[in-house]
Amino acid sequence: MIGFPVGIFVANGMEWYFHKVWLHEFPSKNRNSPFFTHIAHHKRARLNDFHDEGYAESMFKNSEMYNEKSALIGLAAASTIFLPVAPFFTAGLYYGIWNYWKVHAKSHLDPEYAKKRIPWHYDHHMTSNQNANWCVTKPWFDYIMGTRVMTNVSITETNPLAINMPKWLEKRVNLVARRLLPKAYAQIDANTQFDQQNLRQGIEVAL
Ligand SMILES: [Zn+2]
Ligand SMILES: [Zn+2]
Ligand SMILES: [Zn+2]
Image 1 (cartoon, rainbow, N blue to C red):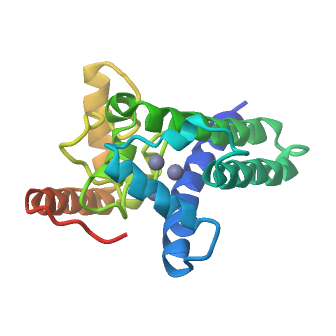
Image 2 (image 1 turned 180 degrees about the horizontal axis):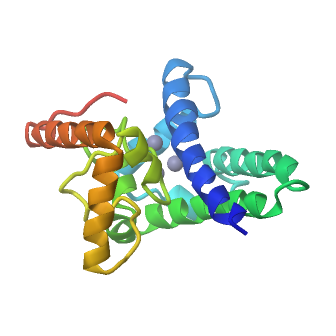
């Protein structure tokens, strides 16, 4: 049973890794790669206040949707190798992959939802530095890796788990997180300040 949350946690790490390395770093060097469509997704989101109407279209009519969906289906298929030994873990991975698609698509059709419910992804698209905030469903690995950058354009989560909890518990979670990840938090605080400064000066970091 513990395998299920572990699977969700690993899927969050996959979001961070694939988004950063394969959707940003790789296509920015290889413009002919099919993942270059993600850079186009960024352009469109920025020009349309986070809206991307492509997410309302069928994957068979829109090549970007086709690429993103078939990559996710491929990942889910590859995850199946764990099924015989760790069924709950595999279920956690499947859930994580499905939830990624659901949340990401919904957010780009409803920017107000994104601002409130996944502010880290709103920040990923709309702030001066789009090379940060790699997670989509939950910001966990951005806290672990120190790549969360908070901005004033969205409503920042009040704890790194991004789960609603009573104030007294939240205070403790925040304290423990800062104690466990001092380096990551130092980076997050510094980059957040730097980003706010850039935003005020209208500086946009190239993708
Ligand atoms: Zn991106
Ligand atoms: Zn995307
Ligand atoms: Zn997006």
